[in-house]
Amino acid sequence: MAGKKLCKVCGVPLRVTKEHEWLSNGTIVQRENREHRMVFIETENLAATFSGVEEIIGRSIERIIIEAKRRATFDFVDHMLPAAVKKILRVVGMRPAVKSISALGSVMGFGDIQLVRVHRAQLLLHDYVIMKIKEPYSIALFCGDVAGTFNAVNQREVAVTYKQESTVQYEVTGRISTHPLGLQDRLQAKVYADKEGDVKWQPCAECGGPMELSEYQWHVDRGIIESREHPRRMALVGPASLDAVIEELESELGDSIPQVVIEAQRRFIRTGFYTLEEIASEELFRKQLAIRGLGNVREVEWGEGSMRFRMENQCLHLVIVGLVLGFFELAFGREGVVQWEVTDGGDLVVEVALKEGS
Image (cartoon, rainbow, N blue to C red):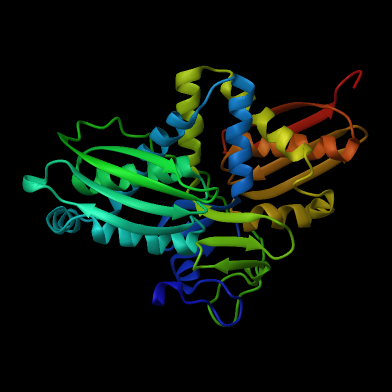
């Protein structure tokens, strides 16, 4: 399939570098909609953050993740698809939409998505779609993707369920209701800072994308992206949808959620999933976060038992705060105390010091 064709030089799917651009300011944007940012993030990090939050608060957050992702995906697809296209899809059925999800998932790292059955009842009543997904990047986020896409196309309520068939395979069913989709509580559009930067990428001579992406291997037949150097899996996702999950958690569970997210990320970093060698210099730290589209590191100052960090164009700021705190503790081998703020200009400033008595 043309959409799965890999660049002969860097090995990245041509669709990825054709549709996305790694900018010099530490961000990844869609070429057709430069206001829509993306992040290139470890799926293990996503899973650990979600499970870490569940462990700290003592309850499952899967329902909240699915609902937040549904709303974010609905907003994106509803704005992206022209009304005429949605009208055609409502007539011809969901098969083209599922094929589109499958093709996209193969290059974005979502997993291997296959259509099993599309059931279309008389007068479009009680339609349902059954898919199988192997090695999903996140089964909860994928269910939200499915529900939001079907919402946008059909403008009807959708119930998504799944069952695990093996350690790597799930069956996902989307049931499209007879009830019209009511007036949606639209997500507040996420506006990220967009300051100029000077991160330098080595362009691929063939596709123009950053040659730094050649450090990752795309298995498009499995819908998986892996680091060539470390046992890590990556995915390209919109940070606005992940921020929506955090905001939904805070809305439902209270003001303690930001600190819970920071703590969950701190614990993950302390496991040693990332190494101190990866941030051995400010420039290396900067490139590691920039290739992931998380922002542009402008300042990393290490003191005697302290650290100051400043990033422009940040996204997923709570995750970044937990990451900085975790790296600080790895470096000093002791607990740290963190203070942080997002300035009026959108910069994230993090200051960490050793905890007394630690």
